[in-house]
Length: 237
Image (cartoon, rainbow, N blue to C red; front, side):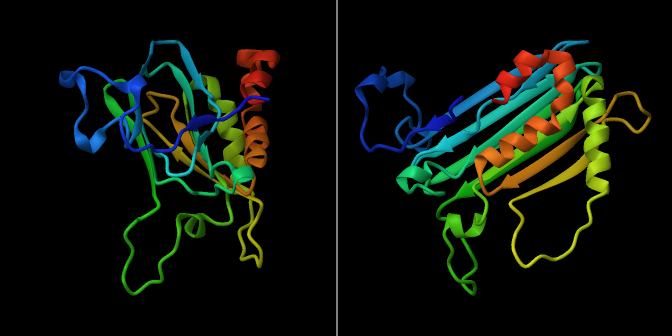
């Protein structure tokens, strides 16, 4: 079984492995010791596809993490972008115990921005004085895994149609106990004149990471025809 993408805890002081010449050091507000950060840019050429299906991010206690991803996608290309995180290492009693998590995904189709999605989770998030203070875990309870998925292009239209039909058939009513897994579906059309295939945004929350993984694996089942059964199974093992 594959593991998660791990973000280690913040450690005071400078680590020997990170010592660099003074002129290359970062500013105090974004130092190596206070923030783990990565910025990735993707270019998806015409008539090509990108299926970004990483393992979920798992932040250790006191970790602080920034992730920014930019996607420049040709109008006749296809993409599936999965961005998800877990609550932490439950076996070590680390349940939403990190300090900060920020993830941003921005997608451009041709020259136009098609979608921009951002998630910010902070342990010390400011709250109204009139409301009782709640920890990050209390605010996100009872779920321990959250996922966002962006889909666009001709290669994923069957998946989008099936997810849309399933979502429209769901009956929503008040429940005494939260569901083990909940999800939402929103269509995003690049051009009303049908110049592009359009796409969708899917959000999932589950009490357990494995529940979310199995849901995603079934939801993206149509990718087997594109990637092949073996590659697809390894991608969402």
